[in-house]
Length: 368
Image (cartoon, rainbow, N blue to C red; front, side, top):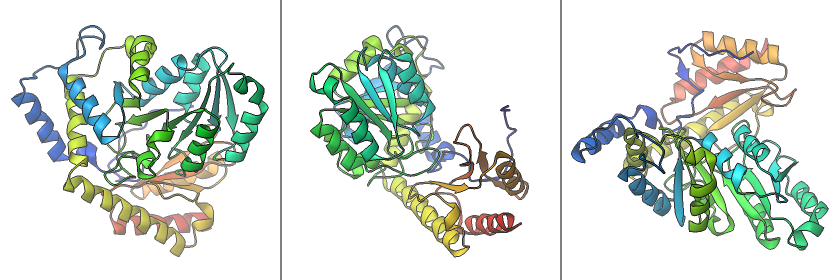
């Protein structure tokens, strides 16, 4: 059974606040100033975006997102969960097929389950298994009886690893499949200015839709779907998690906007560099202390240490927390049985000293 944890003042190796934006005083202050200067003194949106909640800030934010992420359009949702169930429950139609990585996020699985399309999983990051799926359903695909959506994450939330995005995108283009990429854990972390892995690898033209979220490296709340004008118009008309909910408050939208302006600045670049330094230092410490065999290979801010068994992993996590480090245990069935792990989330504000201490302690606990 899950329980809600009590907040403790520990060294943060747990949150998704990769760049420290959620606590950034500059973003906080510029957001407040922006609202005051523009006379937006309003606590709530007052309704859904299709009724009274589509305040002017939405247009400014979606224009900024389109330019920043090299997309034709952007449509803001209230959360990453809302965006994923909103897309997958309405875009794939009856008779269509959705091929998804077996480790895909629960929100995407839920969206597929809510749709009238058929969903089939392929082995994690396995292009060959995806090819087998396409071959198995080739007759329907060739006869144009089914649109096929291929779904992956650019950085997987429970492993921190990435698929071969370019190869997968080219495969989808060759077979006329719709490639959809969730960039929740890549935005702010990868790319020259934190645009994500799709842009870093120049794959925008290979992707039908991208899902980005603002509750992680952007340090706010909400999400957006990036894609064509036709896709945006369709979602506005048919995505139930967009239509039937109160819009984000002006303050939330303004915070996302100011976070993007900060990300697009020298200070934002500095935070990105600090994060990359922390990731590299952590990987070096893991190697130095002989821990590499326990870790899933990853260049992202998510570094996972596999220690099988729920009881075992919970005990190690508890000792880390009792020693001042907020490291969370990820248990089965959230991850497959036997793949329980400690999930280390790294941040721009994690110091070399903190990283050294936690890896030394981890080595001692594993050797117990």
